[in-house]
Figure (cartoon, rainbow, N blue to C red):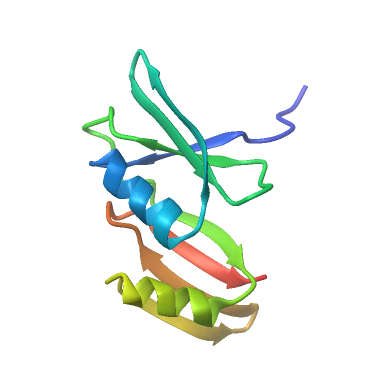
Length: 117
């Protein structure tokens, strides 16, 4: 037996609405779910057509930021410009041995590496 896919990765956030505004409004992810649950608001977002969603969870007060996620974008320059327009500090895009990438943190300190798709 083995794990065949990952459906959800939890991102700890302090304010779910602020996180939704950033992840959907700035990064362009689509809302997959926004429902009440026994733990709190079950709010998830994902790139259109993606198998894995990000759960924007605020009910873990002692949870540290996830550390880092790696994502892909077809246009790093446009993404970097959009992030900067919304006040996000961005490193790059830079050319690395494996290709182009940019680095940034979401408003809760979760780190993102985005590579050129």
